[in-house]
Length: 337
Image (tube, rainbow, N blue to C red; front, side, top):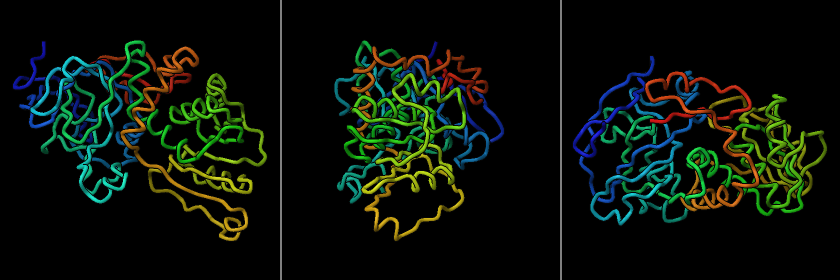
């Protein structure tokens, strides 16, 4: 059995060549730091991109940034949170730089990210593919309501909160024609958000099984035609170009999937001017988006089959199996440390 601060914990360390299971020292907690026992972690697409070499990242490192867990210890000033079941933000922000003060803490000038830090640095237990994770000051935490199961709560920390941020950037979608490109976890979540808000949601994805999943969350297969809002989670240059072409007058395009280098997309400035078009991007999210994500999951737990989007968990020692793309209809694999 693991001990807490000052003892050892089991962690899956990504080395660049594979996963190395190690016993890792649990540090003494500093001011406002939390020690969290991970209940369930889900595997985000960015981690799949890291292990397949499509996305750069520190090596070695403990990956994993979508998770739910119990607070087991708190450093000075952390508040009365021991025992709480929580989810937490991907980002750790300083709260004092010009970006933080302007409401862009996700782009803090001294930003650190859960599951993206070097194992041999000051924050070794930064990822959720371990039995314990340390959350430093600057990471936002949200208590998970009792009716929300772990399997529904875990993706909130990335997929759900990012989708909330993207839909917010689209403005009021009630009664509008919305095109969602990419029916992965983020896309399906955005579909449900837009459908709940009263939008007419069309879904574009080359995978027919994913379209079928999306239809259970309020979308319908895309058949072309103009739209008022387009949300791209695919990261495909061709899809982004199609979104631009489809925007009606006053239309808005929100890009959230283009997180790796790729081909450029042609933009006709005259079409933007004459069409009063808006193109914006969303990367990471603010703590308020995570709060709204948890509220949304709690509110729609009986409306949408969120639990069916996550496969049965594997053990931590079998993490290598989880770092393979899931078979449809499961959009997320999971790990139970």
